[in-house]
Amino acid sequence: MSDLESVKKLRSTTGAGFKDCNSALKEASGDLEKAIQILRIKGVSKASKKMSREANEGLVFIYGDEKKTSIIEINCETDFVAKNDDFLNFTKEIGEINNSVNSDIEKLNNSKMKNGTTVSQNLIDLIAKIGEKITIGRSKTLENSKSKIFTYNHSVVKDNLSKLGVVVSLEFEKTSKDIEQFGKQLSMHIAASNPMVIEKNNIKDNVIEKEKEIIREELKNLGKPENIAEKIGIGKINKFKEDNSLLTQDWVMDPKLKVKDVLNKFSSSLKIKDFIRIKIGE
Image (cartoon, rainbow, N blue to C red; front, side, top):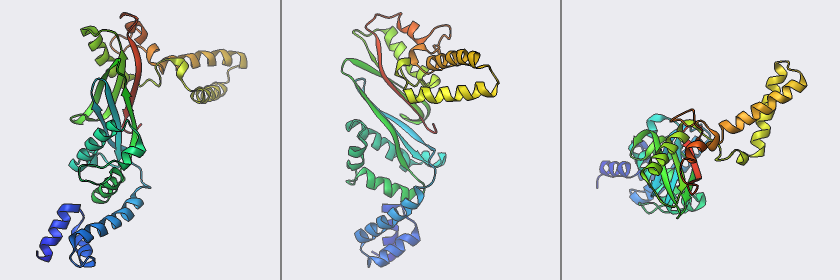
């Protein structure tokens, strides 16, 4: 094999540039395997420098079936890279593995991909090849043998790869067309309304305290008397809880109704068990 052919093969295998491949081959005395290792080592160095940059773009991938489904986000720096075939394929394969390990990030990083190397090593290689910071972001797996899982993708790039994804789990005794429709509509509602929790009592105390501080400062700047400010503050906090809790949100399909009103039209056995919403950039 000529030197030029070796460089071409190394470029094809690693995706690295001509100069880097040529240099690695010389350092490895023409040994392709050693040259690949050299580029990987250099790739680690290049990748680590990129990790200090912001990665606010990327894709969300949903994978699974009606009993068990996972959602994961893979972040990058630019929307251009988010549409790159290498990035798309990496995200899909990572998403499938993530479902098998139930969104356990440590198990995910140590899992082997189709090429025989680990997820963490493939991530480093992809960073070196593409030239951008790439990270594995939020993920969650919903699983319940008694429930059915519904999903929704918004701003789809390809297949189940999108900019916003929702997974919601409904539990019921017997399915029907109305329940199936409700499940699909509920996942769309969650995408649009971005609830924090299912019920308002589940909002974390630190979130409530932070909101109270914002409201106090707001009312203080308006010069409201303390007794009036306290009453207004209570009302604002209650409104905050209702707006951010799924059951008390206005139903997007009919704002005259709350989500709980729509839910109550079905039998008492129908319950919203869990949900997850991931939007790139949030």
